[in-house]
Length: 261
Image (tube, rainbow, N blue to C red):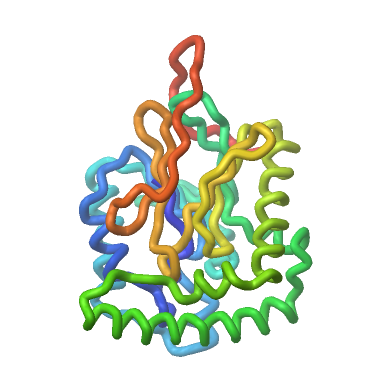
């Protein structure tokens, strides 16, 4: 299982939904692909931390007690944790990036994705302006879904809808996807698993696999690998949003994590 961009401690984190999702989870390895704790938000604004956030932490501890291997790959919002990369902490291993080997033999780069900001021409000024605008859109998203909940309607992402209607946002996402695929190709790998841009996706392009496990601010999604190597993008309710079947191999292949280049 792969999850990222939880942003625990930030105002717009859907901690309760994630806690429910983790409570029913059984997996051999869980990759935490960056921005799990939003140290950026907590340093600049008042932290938003309640019972649901504690439930997420408790659910992760419960997974570890059930022998789930936890691999933490810090992102840009939890960047200080990168100082611990290479260490095996009591509850998890912290890595700068990893290479995950699927059951069908695909070797996938696992990285948060903020390394590709330069390739998308997303500079510091744009980042600050985008962050300011984005959090205001998320506030509108929060209010809208509070109303939808009272009406008995399912969660719907206003921010995702607005991004899909923005040509600039779509161009940025396209550049990001290509930068990730180019990085995987340079490393001689079969694809990439990342987060960062809060746009869940699972696709194949030019012989490479691109998987973005989404986030727990907008899309409320996760990526899972089944025992045969099938990859599925799941909603927080367990719905299959996208799927890539396993590739045919002449012989069985062990799954695991390899050292990243």
